[in-house]
Image (cartoon, rainbow, N blue to C red; front, side, top):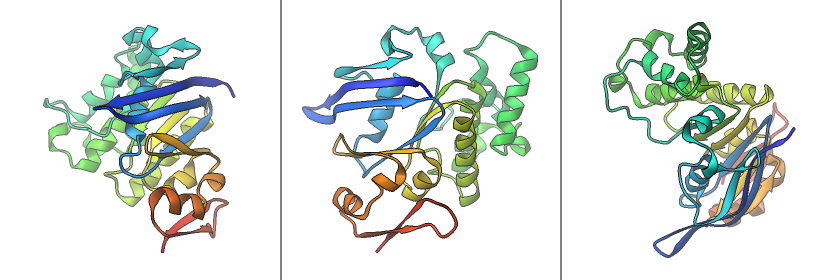
Length: 253
């Protein structure tokens, strides 16, 4: 595995308040990294800086060893795909049209593009909705459409900001199984999650943020400890062994 993305001493300041401070992280191909932490810890800001949507006030972000700001927009879109928290589409596109937008950064290859779109629609279980206008979708359906667009983009790096927030139990698991499969096939996936048990179940690595700084970083079993979670979340928890899987299970007391 190789490091695709590097953050060096990244800091973000807003209204004289440090949103991120002294963040040093590297992200490798073939892995899922979950960014977790309390509200306001800096998860979405970190994701925004890492993908190039936000400019850091200090430090640098390198993709394949090259500063992110030095990569032209078209080339960057072929290297990384982004799923934001906001899924609203302001125009009356169909689900299929939105998913097909994921192919726009690539040189046109009609047969290949069609296969990618079909595979993405299948993965997000959107075939029955493919002709529906996106403005008529529920929140969960809209989130799945955005996720499918990211899949169709077919990039080596994926940034997902709370992709499961609007989803029911089945689609949460299906989405993260798809994410896990992408990483197993070689992608580098960075995902913001609030559900610690989803993070434990699917991520190779968890980065726990606290007030804009990295509070813990490592495999789920090393990060999701009772003492660390109680301190960062200010909430009493038990951390148990999952009865069927070799992962920790976090239970609120």
